[in-house]
Image (cartoon, rainbow, N blue to C red; front, top):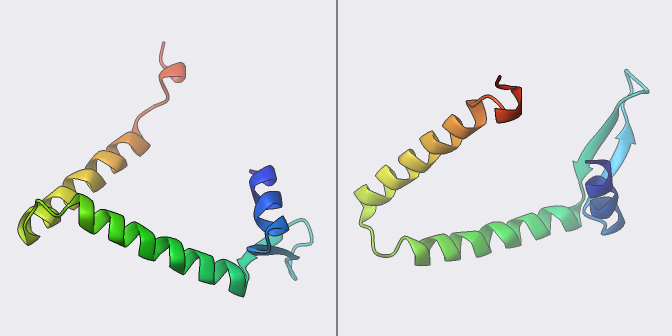
Length: 85
């Protein structure tokens, strides 16, 4: 994770600042450049999503998003196969 933050910081997208209450902690915040890049990426994702879901009507889109969310939640709560006997 640290190397990813290093790259984001080097690109000027985030900054790391010490926590005022706990000097062992670093707070990661986005820069104005990072906020602009995030907005740009969210807009691009929206365009791609609209194109991908174009074949579905509004109700089907809601159902699809709901099912995908449930699947994602299910995957996140599964035990790691390496932890199983």
